[in-house]
Every structure is written in C-alpha cells, then in structure tokens.
Length: 223
Image 1 (tube, helix red, strand yellow):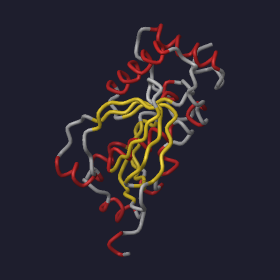
Image 2: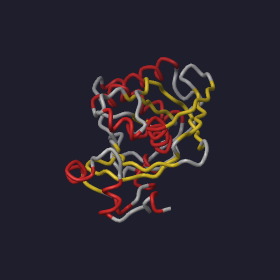
Image 3: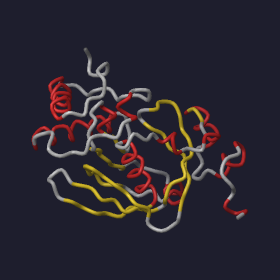
Image 4: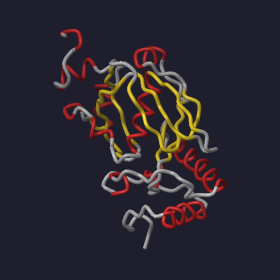
C-alpha cells in the first residue's frame, strides 16, 4: 500500500516509518493535495518521534521541496507526515511597490516545531494567498497584521518571536496547516480566483479593486 493510500496514523512508529520511507526514496516527494485527510487533522506534537539525524534530514528535504515548488513555507502534513513541523523562507525578489504595500520583507530560513501564534494588537490586513496543496486557486484572507509565535527549534530550544506584515501571514498560514486548517477555510469566498484570472485581474499590490468588483469585505475607507 502506498503512503498516500494509508489512513492517517499518529503513532510514533508510523510517523517514523513514513519519514524513513520518504528519506530512503532519494527523490523529492510530491506535495499532498487538498482532499487528503492528513491535511484535515491536527498533527501530532513533535516529542522525539524522530532522531536528531532523521529530523535534520527531513528539514533539509522539506526545504528542497519548498524551493522546487516554489513556495515560502511547507508543513510536514503536506508531505503526508502528521507531525507539527514546518519550514519557512521568503527570499524572493519582489517589486518594491508591492513589498511596501504588503509589508513584505525577506524572511530568513527557519524550521519550527509545535508552533502557536497569538495576535499582537487588533490590526488586520487582507491580501490574496495561495497554497501548494491547493493548486490553481488564490483567495483573499483577512489575518492579524502582527503575531507572537511560540515554537520549539529543531535543537529543542523553546523560542518566542514576533512577526509583522507578510512574514506574519506566512507564519499563520503554515501554523494553520499543522492544525488541519487550509487557507480557504479563512478566505473570503467571493474572492476565490483561479491563477489565470488572478494574474490578469487582481495581482495589484492591494485587494481594493478585487474587493470592489467581486463584492467581498467592506471598504476600510467607508468605515
């Protein structure tokens, strides 16, 4: 039976077996797509299911898969592994106007285990997002502008970091993955667009035009 065909199993033995199979394959695994149950369960907290070596090799593999996709984050469930592990990195060249409007700054690579986030303040922002597990669709998601992230580093150190702007959005998106939440669960449904329509109509720095023409979210200027 293939890894994809097995029911989700959170036992240490099954998680370790899955990781070992993926690492032994010697190729980059495919990204699990929406509809697979592993994306809809709260992943098991990491508590030593893998050796330090296995964890390190898995993190390296996840980073390679993320780069190839390409994307700015990847959660272990997206490879069919139900543990609370994600990798994040945003080093893409972005138009300065887009970066300024979206608060997008480079995010150096890091891996996080067992992350939890809390909003900082009451500020929110809505922008279009996509997901490597939901090919072909983009949608606007309203999220806190700044968050405080508590997580464990791969070396076992408990850390707390604050993020704002696009970095905060990436942190929230990947942490949600580890709790069975996809970005469409939080999206403005009227904003959903396929990639071609998004690219031709709504790829402006902000969502004001899409909001007006598709009829989602109130205009902040009218509050």
